[in-house]
Image 1: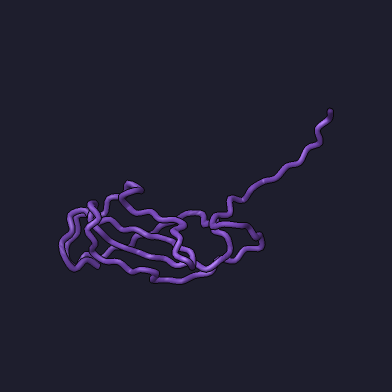
Image 2: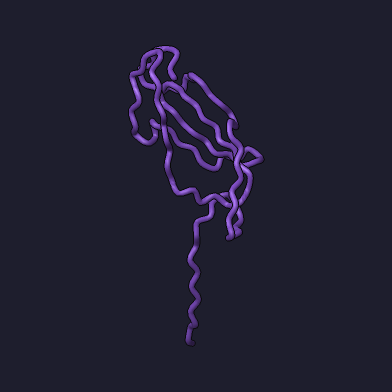
Length: 107
């Protein structure tokens, strides 16, 4: 909900690991999605959809609203904590779902 007029609001999200490493982030500006202009009282819902191939672990989600120049409107750091579980264990942050093939080589 907007409490003041905003000409070009940008809404973003950031996923961090439990130690603060920025695993993934994007915003409506990066994605080319226009939101504004907005007036006080306007309400919007922004949904980010993507295949989430994070490795098992603990993560947090930060959300923010700002002007295109980065001037902040509102920010909720680590607003949500969540766990990723998977039957496949992999090292790192992203599970790239590798396919492995082995072939015999004749000399």
